Image (cartoon, rainbow over all chains, first blue to last red):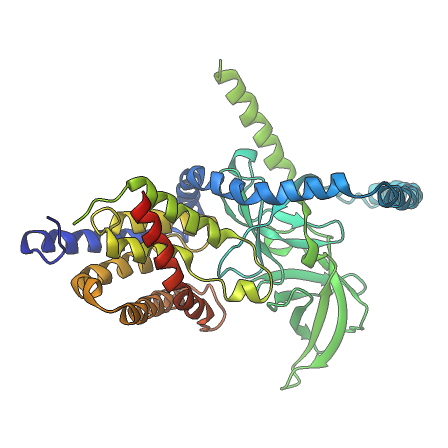
Length: 292
Length: 156
């Protein structure tokens, strides 16, 4: 009969315990390197994916039922509203087209590098608990779709975050408002570069290191500066809503309101860098050739 | 020692894992109990041969991947918990119901403490912060949890 206090078993049991604890410590250390940790997560997530599906299923069913029983008048109203929004967006687009054409011509005159349009794909947010990780969420695209760590995540209104961990069919995204997140930003009006740190509050970013000599006003728009190479340049981040001096008067400090609607994220956009997307295209073509 | 149905053990643990994934909002998120730890404690007291170190390790790694936390964080604390239970297993089987509940509280506290220290060491959190609400709700839930599983165990 088994008992952990049996002398014959005891030593064996302690050894097993130590072995597992050492494995855990090794895993924790290896987790710092994405190259090793991602395959481990990908393998384990084949087992966890059904659990995520099981949590998602009732939510999807609820949404399906509530949309199928919502009354017709509501849908008609919504339809009219959306049509109005679409026509407004089309008019804006017409003006933009002229401006972008002018921009291209000006850039040619200056012989400046052309800015490539962003290559994005849509991803859906999976509503699931992420434990102690505040300001995290999961999207339904992962390793199989070619998602990589550090990829930028956009909302329709601005930058939302970046990919933190990649599983097989899902990926964890860290929001720009996470306490551990720092984002290289630039003031659109003045071109001053600084960092925007997360505060742990969905409606606030903090910029504690603005040089004292610079001109900053409330209402200034922040865009990504592209420094560090993680986020592409020129994406809208937020708007400054308060400015104060640091306690030792060496810096100006500001708070910004993120443009992305971080409270109600349902659908997000994954940004692909040009070269990466081509590489994935090649990979897929190759695997297709190998398959038969 | 009795031999329980492996199916019941694993189904109950998976159900607890699912309960941990429910996306509560606001206060419910903060006080969400540690269902998985409760299940592991229950089965490592009742059926230590079938739910031992490896079972705890396996399910904790699944939780780590699901939560996107540091790989092995929950594994480390949960394996330590099962080891502690095996050390005091005979006493746990003999104690009164209320004492057992207190013991469960102590085990969970230890579990939370280990994970907070790991968080702190790995710079996952900006400050050393510890949330004790889940421990409280888990202790409050334990009697009902044990009763339900006891009944299920008798039937199957």
